[in-house]
Image (cartoon, rainbow over the protein chains, first blue to last red):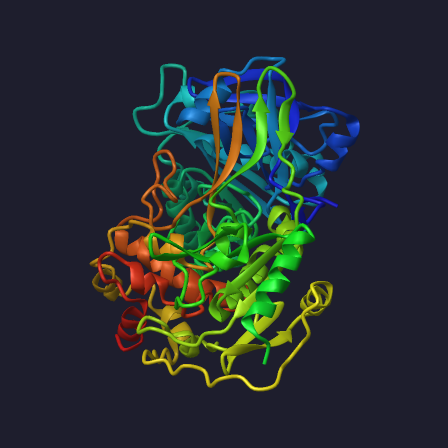
Length: 282
Length: 324
């Protein structure tokens, strides 16, 4: 059963060990985290969309989506953008260092509602991180879906994450991958699109008879949701994952709400239809 | 009618059994709920202590774990073992616990709050007076209300009536040799302050972007006093403090009025003081009703009594519901 099995929360992390690091971009680093025991990994069963809290011991704790496929048996991965004190400390970690880990928390992408339909994944920058496990899950059962589009972009060529995964996804039959960088972000070797992700999404004209899943910086999400609406998607078929400042991660500390919904407990995955009922406070 | 000295004897009996006792005392004249060593220091003449049961059940700064980066990693801090007797809480404070229970012992339970709550007896002394900031009756409570209490003492002709409100309370009375004695009881004080909130919830649901939020929050300076003294405010921060390789993970009170409350690197979803004040009001009067079916306000009036800039929640609510 995915999600946090215990409903009594004492806010104490388990220990995990950094087993691999990969520098994705100049300011994004992926850490693969191994568990203390196979039982600990099993108890951490998660579904794409869920998040965890990672502690740089003694520095602080921060929230990250789980960015690895659930099928990985021994470890999970998080991708961390360096933006402050805690993420800087996490960037300093090396293989063998220990971290604190709490989770998995939150709800998950409605995978079952996507079955048998066209699917469009739209990612911006590090926003591809929560989509990555969902894309892998979808492509591992490719025949259960109709058309699969992936639209992914970043500010510049150097800011694109998971370039190996992107190359793999492009090779899967019936997957259309469109990569883009912001105007001015291309280099001499770039052979993808040039333009902001929401604009490129509209340009690719995906069929509106399907599910669209989007994640990226807040401003990109807002424009992508507008684009999805203009393309004719049904608001209950447009899905995103939101990020708010979090501390407890389980709905107790009162911090991460958008209106009456807590992103840690009622999200982080929301449909556009749900968001239309919430105040513009994210 | 039970004499005060018998009540004090029962408190002493609880102490002898190992209860840690909290009761209202005066510190430089100010009524404060504090841990006491002997019942003679208990103050019976105040209207309301400045602080609330939150100090005991959701401590201001609580160590969750010791951190030892090079050694054991994370060592959770154990609980204080002793049972707790809170004597002299007012009905509004006890009612606030029922609200905190709904929030912190819901779908996900705050384990530490749960354990402390389970070993705490709430022995409330009902009010014989009130002041002009009290508005518990407007929130559906009252000066002699037993909601949230384990034992309720009501002033009665110079002494008190004694009621075991919960099973836990009845068992406690038995253990300390105090008999239930529910005859009599003086008339409750009459509150001068009333606020008619009418269709407040419907107004709040429909008026998130109403410019009136700027008007009603104009005097607020985000000092957080209302949060610190409110018996139902419970939001908290988790922070690590270390000197080198060793340190502690702390849970500390945090206030939605503070500008950093929701601030992330490069993004602040709640911009402006009016937005933070709106969160305070919405959380208490709209979101808690949506999520746990209770308004998170008991009308104790501490926010009104102590706001340094005269922000009055009753005036705010009245202004809101009357604004188009």
